[in-house]
Length: 237
Figure 1 (spheres, rainbow, N blue to C red):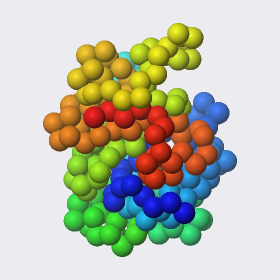
Figure 2 (figure 1 turned 60 degrees about the vertical axis):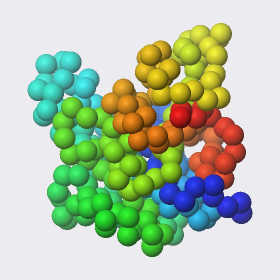
Figure 3 (figure 1 turned 90 degrees about the horizontal axis):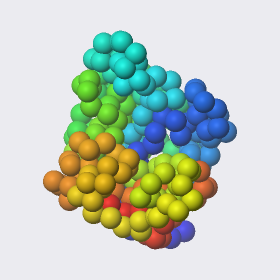
């Protein structure tokens, strides 16, 4: 097994990734494939934190555009991320990995409260820490939560797992002439309006010089390939 290029990483998964080919909910086959990939990557010796979105269950922004109060809908979205975090924890522990779920909203029966020093201690002991409930505040996405947690735990890189194999100048699903970037800088991502992460998350990473690698989660083994330094996907730096 190749050694990890990084000491500590933050893996960002969208909620939709857990739905697989279904439109909503959690697809067991998909979540177990992700767990296999994470387990394989963990064998390289890397310390790993995970942030998961909640879009497969509830999307706060979509609800707010239909008349629901934005803060209330965002809190509902945060609770959806907790459901996903528990599902991910179960899948990982079935692979023999030690995990901890930490939540930005206190819910003592199912998760630890988020405490930075405790999270770092878990990582140092080889546990995978799953951060749920976003930042704990409405109006912030789980992308921003991922950037924030990555910096708090001193991660070397954010690994943004997506449905495509990198960043393109336009949507490759609808444009045959879309051009893929092997690497791109933060300012170009913001100026071109590329939908990598939201602008708050990109700005946060830019200010703190934290690189982002986007890659295709659907290809088995890609998590490990990124961690061992293979040049796949797109690097934002």
